[in-house]
Amino acid sequence: MKIQFLFVLLSSYLCFGQNKTEKTILHYPTYEYVKSVNNLSAEAALELAKRILKAASTKNKNVSIALLDASGTTVLLLRGDGVGPHNTEASGRKAYTALSTKTPTLLLLKNSEKNPDTKNMNSLPELLLLSGGTPIWYKGEIIGSVGISDGGSAENDDWIAQSASIPEIGITTTK
Image 1 (tube, one colour):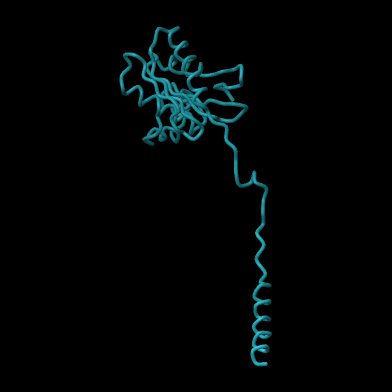
Image 2 (cartoon, one colour):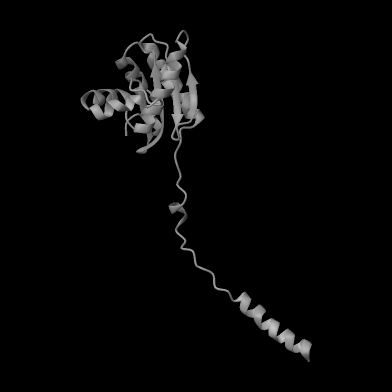
C-alpha cells in the first residue's frame, strides 16, 4: 500500500511538471529577419570589364579596373598594361568610396570643395575622393561599384567608369 500511495503521489508531480507553460515568441514573417540582396556576379564583372576596356581604348588608354559587389568585396581587379601599381590600389579605393557613399566620386569631389564637412571624408583611409568611381545599379538597387584609374584625367576616369553598364539587362551606373 505504501508503494502504491508513493506512486500516486509522485505521478501527480510528474503530470504537473509536464504541464509547464512556455512563453510564446512573437514570430514575424521571414522577410523581417532575412533580406535578399542582389549582387554583382563574376560573369557580370567580366562583361563590364570588357566594356570598360573598349571605352578606354577609344581614348587610347590602358586603365586599372576594380569591380566590387554590394558588400564591398572585390569581384575583379585588373591592372592595364603599363599602368602603375598605385593606380590599381586607387581603383579599389575609388570603387569602395562610390559603393559606401552611393555616389560617383567625381560628384563627391566637387561637393567636398563646396562643403568643408564633406572634405573631412578624405581623412578616412578607405575612401578616396578622386574621380573614376561610380556605383552600379540594378532596378534601383546598388549591386556593386567600379573604380577606374589612369585614364589620363579626372574627366576620362569618370567617363570610362560610367561605361560600366549592361543596359540591355538593366545594369547601369545611374539609379
